Length: 258
Image (cartoon, rainbow, N blue to C red; front, side):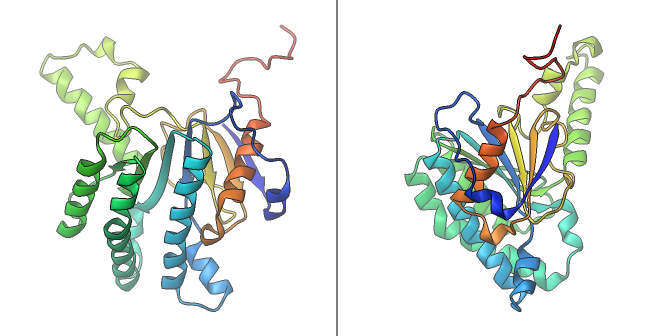
């Protein structure tokens, strides 16, 4: 993994090259900075979250325009429940309204929606909306939009280990058959390619328990931009940074001597 901080000013730099073999197939984003965006403008945190939803709509449109096949968004972590109850109610309300308002349009756009994370203990109405979104769009073969909701990567990895352990205990699987590839098939993201590019907004430089297994070889780009200001130009700037790198996956650079 290679980390890089990109300041807002670089968004006027090189544009990504569409059709370039280095165009990422899977972009994952940690959407961060709603509260700080609101505080900087003297507005309530709820307004930051509302504008964050608008940024989600923009990035989905941008991903489709740039022909990115897979987009994964970190919407609500399992640790976010520690926030004030009033803020959680506001966030849940926004998420529910997003599904109700946007689901039909996303379906018309041939978007396939997946939601990863724990559903136990989640509001019954929210679970129903999640299931409705997944069921309605399951057969769509356009952009795969994965939403990480009530998600934590360590819990996901532990859950995958338990699934494998139960198969071993039942005699369905030999321990020697457990490979990284088999382990990946037991994660919530089974069937998805690993992210090529992971973006985090708001200037924070950490993964925050997001796709830890899947991002082992992802390129990391950290942006100073707060999530509510994220748009197609911001995404293009991150992709241009990605395209300027050489991905070696532990090997030597192409220009390095043998």
